[in-house]
Length: 309
Length: 296
Image (cartoon, rainbow over all chains, first blue to last red; front, top):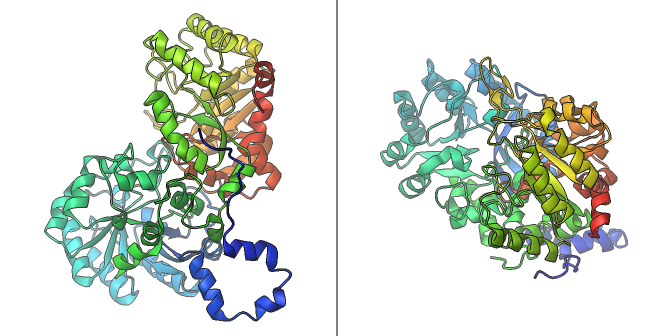
């Protein structure tokens, strides 16, 4: 039987100082060196890189943190200091370049360097090569985010393979969004199919230098492809849609009920899907599972840094 | 890797999150627990690691003596039923049971309620998301179940969704046979104005679900089992007040993080959080808990 649930819990040094000592020793605290502050920061854990946020307006609801400044403040409150940002407009708009330009400008002018712009192209549409070139050369974006379910192409589309090759040549990250919203809750006017990730395995075996990440990749969306994606490609996954008690830890162990296989921690990256999801959801997942410090470091920032190059 | 549920490699407070102690102080009661559904008592006991880690004070299990395929548990052996009754009695300080009923079989449902609630450890009834005969909870033939539940002071939890689909496509157009919508709950609540109902999942499509039940003061809204949408709880509190919201974890299928985040995202007072995380449910459950001598 578990012990009494109201037993005390050790308070770490940072919190102890904040809650008890700080008011009394404020003048002394002001004199602390930056080295001490940095050491405390380090002891409290690393800052977080979020690979999955969007800016601007979700087409179907005014979101609480739709304003870029408000989102930046909210993320910073939770020690998310870098966020790879797509543009909600890219989901339904057809002028990708306008959306990408606006995103680049927003990331440059707001958020004090927090947001890394991730443009969007539609390889199923016209002139996507030029959109991709502008993302890379004009807007200096380190990657692109794709919405195949919303843009109406499958991953066996010939131009999708061309896009992967071109992004690999340019050293760009490709984020493939498997889902934005639970299909059961879609606006009735919207008919969005599922993305079959199966073709990715063969494509990426032919293109091992491609850097590809699946966003909002809930287990059922990956189907039976988990083992092949993990073992035969270098693809990574974000944790925003990982569900189940202790989901992230169980996924790493291969024990998560709705994933057909394990995903090693080296292949998982912190992603919140904010501001559509509350960022607290992904953050709490880091603590719901009994992860060790090395695993947390990888999830919080190290894997993201490696992926972005 | 931490082996104790209370051991954390990093302090959540350093990330602007509640610590386990903070969660314990919120006295969280989980209205929607599926820990027994797949794997019975052993699976539940394994899942207690996460229950303990996230500071959940009490779980209300919705799958006692039944399953979605067999709500009345006709295929469950007497031995298994006895084992479950004994478990609930032994762990009454931590786990409470609601029994699935079947609106397509009202007489048999009432018999099950006598067995498990009047003469057993359970404290309420649950309507699954659909049933073998496809009868919604708003069907008048189901009223006998509600009357008996009211007599027993039992909690009444109704799964609701508004699955988009059908022709023409519309919210609720893809619901399973017998799967209730919030409108079904509102109709039932109008027929029984002195009986309280819990509208499960906020209808899934919460922007619509909340509005269907808003005028019915005897309907409480539980909001687990859907993706966490920022702004959901702000919206719901603005429409119906914090005193009508009830928290559910929907574990082990959903992450506690997902469900806790819905509330943490909202701009609420501490008192409102206390109410949503457990205070409202304790108020609702008080009559039957007192009658059975369970700790509140």
